[in-house]
Amino acid sequence: MADTGDTPPQGHQAGKVKFLVCVDDSEDCRVALRFASLRARNTGGHVVLLYVIEPADFQHWAAVGRLMEDESREEAERVLQTLAAAVVEPADIQPVLIVRAGRRGEEILKLIEEDPTIDIMVLGAAAEGHGSNELVHLLTSELTKRLSIPLTIVPGNLTDEQLESLT
Image (cartoon, rainbow, N blue to C red; front, side, top):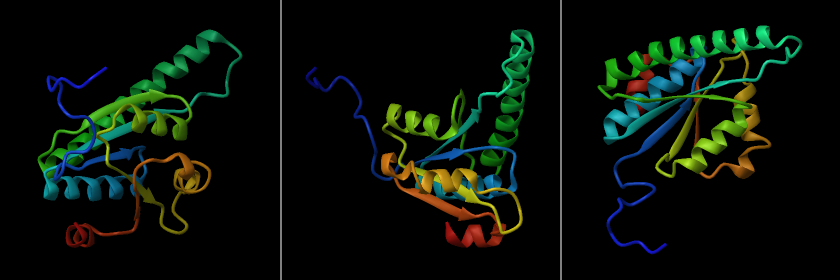
């Protein structure tokens, strides 16, 4: 299909960086989110928060499985609303909130493929002895080959002052 000029351009717009943050309820995620929010504020950009509900291994009873899915979705919505406020307050940006179900790495890659306006993915790395770096490991090992945008990894032990000076 030829471009007739009637549709807006797809992909990156100069000076309007869109940051993707895959979120959970961890402290390193909050640091990554603050970094992305401040960068978006300072560049006139946008922030997308993605919460991925991993499939439960519990498959024995359908009713129990549905209840677990409902509880997971409620938790995702709660976390997203809390984190969205953390974007709005310092950066005065209304983030895009997305909930998906599936394997985290695969859902991240699908979203990036579906939305060509996402420019940079930001992840928080847990400080030594504080949590897991599972997603960082996943994206920097097997999925890096398929990642089509830059990946910024923010140390989870940075202070607000350090984040301000970096952004």
